[in-house]
Length: 191
Image (cartoon, rainbow, N blue to C red; front, side):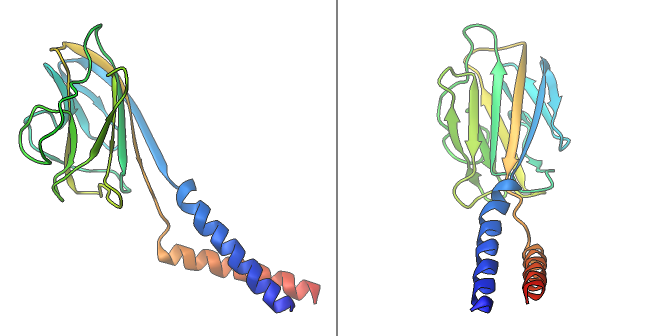
């Protein structure tokens, strides 16, 4: 009977660890920037963000794509601007994942995937989300465009990359082996 209790306890601990670990290891990577037309900031991964007359993005509207330099996969990107009075993010929907187009969008060009876009109610912020099960991996090509309703000469922003850093199978095996060792030691002490 004690053996079954120990097995049940081990299974319960494994389920708890499995359900909490991916949530606890999600990473937010925030950064701020701003300035006049041209380079407006550098995120923690080394990506340079640019202001171009009536848009903001990476590598810059009409400048092609960039390889993602994050160490882990990104699943969403959030940006909020401090814009001149009366200027907001242009709500025109994107026509597709690739090609030159003056719309607010995030495209993972390695997979030709357009990320879902949610504009803040006041038109000063936007969030982009990878489709279910999708992500942006290190080295994959992407671009971000945020188009404004009027030309601007400067802006300030705050932004955040987020994603999931899920432990590899080897890490799970080591965690379960450690938990098994603890349960065996407890069982021997009681015996």
